[in-house]
Image 1 (tube, rainbow, N blue to C red):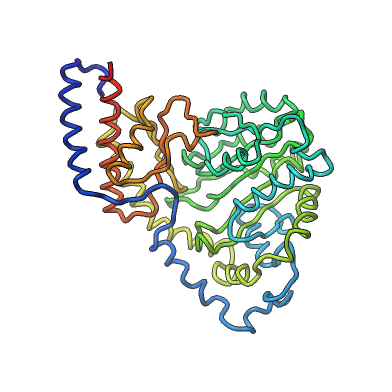
Image 2: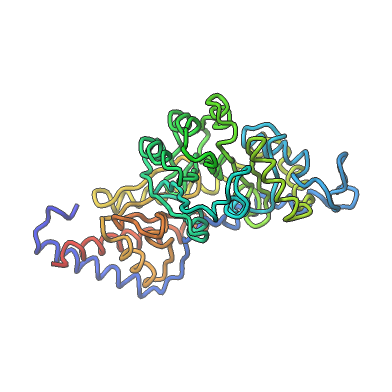
Amino acid sequence: MYTNLSSEALGAEKKTISQIYEGYCEKKLKLNMARGIPSTAQLDLSEGLLTAVDSSEACVTDECDTRSYGQLDGLKEAKILMAAIMEVPPEEVIIGGTASLNLMYDTITRAMTRGICGHAPWGRQDSVKFICPSPGYDRHFSICQHFGIEMIPCAMGPQGPDMDAVEALVRDPAVKGIWCVPKFQNPTGIVYSDDTVRRIAALSPAAPDFRVLWDNAYAVHGLYDEESPLLNVRQAALEAGNAELVIQFTSTSKITFAGGGISAMSAGPMTRAWSLESLFIQTICYDKVNQLRHVRFLKDLDGVRAQMRRQAEVLRPKFEAVDGILTRDLSGLASWTAPRGGYFISLDVFPGTAKRVVALLKQAGVTVTGAGATWPYGRDPEDKNIRIAPSYPPVSELCTAMELLCVCAKLAALEKLTEN
């Protein structure tokens, strides 16, 4: 929208937008859209958790007294519930604590220190690399960086990762894994296509200890009454003869209480036994009372779906407000995703300006995820991607923040175009 303007017109527009920006700065805003934090209205939808287990007698199941030790891999009832979300058999599930990120971190820790299923520990190998579809989830990248694992960016498209690139990269025996958020991907909101899932499930890596870390955090997080189907990766892997290739993760963190949910992982028999061997040393058991209250509150997959329809009623207006403001104010200058579920919107501003946009926002009192966070090492090669998290602010504050973001995106683009 600016590239065809004369230098005089650009200068005039920059002056106008600068004045609008200064007006926002005078308001002394204090708004935060940095992470996908559920709002109070969303958390209130799970108030029934607080009374789902309300007595000593209620803590006892046919299997055990949940207040005591035992059931290292989780309550049978909790495994059935989470298996339904993950579309795997209950016997393949391990129930963890409040966050699936913890399970993913533990998996990488075990691989680094003990090696996967009898293979040499990654920490003793000359080189360890991970494929990181980008833009992607910054916490995945932080885990790799924490352990000194070399990250290889891989382009994320509308169907999922660039599978031609992935299939070429896994020929390197130093490449030990790939991060995947297959449904309503963080931050783009796309759903992996059937072809992408099949190609991932059929990978033939040179490294025998290669694993696909399948972080299906948003498996049931649609915003609309429609199906957004994701091909069953476990079944696809079995059909491809890759029973041990994929390790799946999920949680109820954005279904019930963000800081008090339950997490789960699923893997092939050898990988699951390898995980449990370390887990036996690491802990006595996870919080089974919390597992039980989730079972009592959510009941089954139909109960989960009903809960997520209520969640969608809170979230949908926020996503639609963001899309409407971006369409009105940034068409022709930026591009963005319009996801049908999940927690994020991926915005690409004018190349070379994302860091400047984030800095302008911060100066005016609005915090968003740092520019570059969606790329390994925080290095967005085009400095254009910003992750928008609409969930936490009320709609009125969200609209103010988005209108300011659009002003900042225009001002940064004008500064870039007039800098010479």
